[in-house]
Amino acid sequence: MDKNDTLDAKGLMCPMPIVKLAKKMKEMPIGATLELIADDVGSKEDVPAWCHRTGNQLIGQKEEGGAFYFYIKKSQ
Image 1 (tube, rainbow, N blue to C red):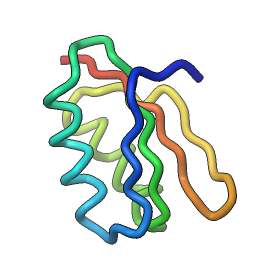
Image 2: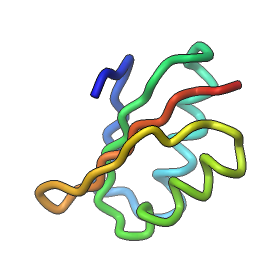
Image 3: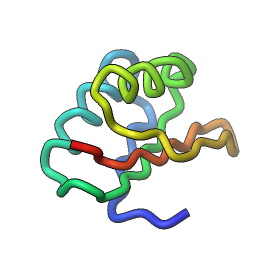
């Protein structure tokens, strides 16, 4: 999956992955894609909900090696 940047949030517990995600997305240009890597099981629900709430697009996700990978495209 093409990405412009990666945010490693492994080891962080809720709500920190979302806090770091929101801060990082503010720094990125519209249309850019961020790869977020988290190992907090809550992120499986939190990240899609955050994307829906903020209008950003979750374009992919996978689980690999105990970590969750999310691909988020900045829409606004």
